[in-house]
Length: 111
Image (cartoon, rainbow, N blue to C red; front, side):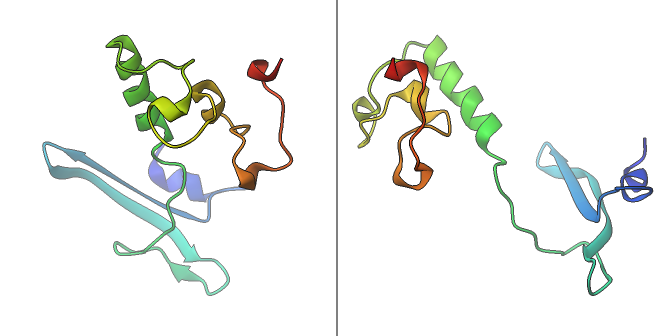
């Protein structure tokens, strides 16, 4: 499948970009579709976008490497590593107990 086919058919993506670096240099730099479908403005090389949830995978890899090295205990209170009193196992989920996650949800650590 080519990058272009993401924007064809239904539902199809509105617009996207992908840039891949190897050895500090871009080896793939693609963009296409619309940056703003209401204004029919095409995506271009310098289109600015909001980026969300892109570091979760890297953070999980780093956390598990620390576990392998014995430098992180997933069952220890987070207070050991920072200022929260939630458990690391809970802090990896949407049920971490932070104020913006209300209503609170139950996890296996609550039982």
